[in-house]
Image (tube, rainbow, N blue to C red):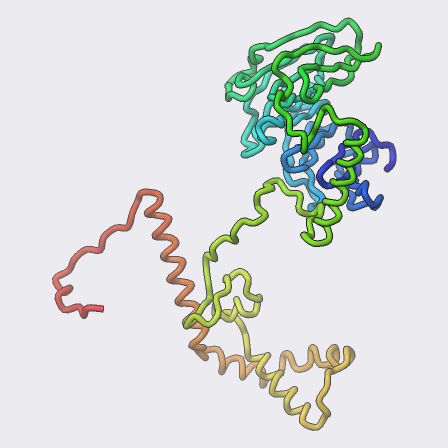
Length: 395
């Protein structure tokens, strides 16, 4: 790690995420010491980072006002969002709602709350005094913003309700601090204590209702001693080793939607089954098969090459051709007059299987169009009756 500025630890994966001045996001496995992956953000030095505890996705705030979401299995951001007109100085994710809301603060003096499910725009936006703000969500959904020489806290549902305009939400609690500059802010887990870091040290403020009153001792015990902490670390390491060996749970499974594991595959839209012999999606077919089904494949060259290879292979022993022979025969006779003649002759040849697949695909497309029209409410226009309908045969 070179010149790191922010660190985040993913406890369930035992990964240490690091970002610094070079602009590289690195994941290191703390159980083995190996560097899992490193991503080049291409956005310069980064001084703002947080994690979503619900899905272990890393949120980065950059100097050009963008916020990017990163996972170990993608070399590019999973989400790229232009949040502010200046550098992003604060990012935090709400734990009480399962990571649904994200708060960002920029050097332009604005604080915005985003819905992580659609990214269609800021749910709430307001201006702050003193420029950029440090942000932090508590376990019960209280948002703390440190700006200028004071710390302001906002409670639900005011900060999560959609509001048009830039009016600030109602304050829950405010506290002035004489020591400047204010550098950081953190909530104490399972307690109603907010700690602010400044030039003279630390200051603590009581924020009633910000901490989680009910805790699970098997998940996180605030009263554990040194021996219990050691046992918990050993147990989590053994669980990680067993999962990586038998269940194959790797850091690559970190995604925006953690519930995709165990879900059913989507139903195929267009299939190419003829007489129920094979049922493959049209998009999954090889390119030659798709061209053949569409009637755009030129099979004359393949047939001519096959006949020429059969005639040449009668005198040679059976075996694979070398690479030099394949390159030698690759462009042989591509433009011969005989092949042009055969191409014209086979232009009107009809393959019954390809015709059947083509008809099936056309029928499926028409059914999909009708279903979409019915779903939209338009319905299907009934056919007009005719005097000659009496002579139609019953199908």
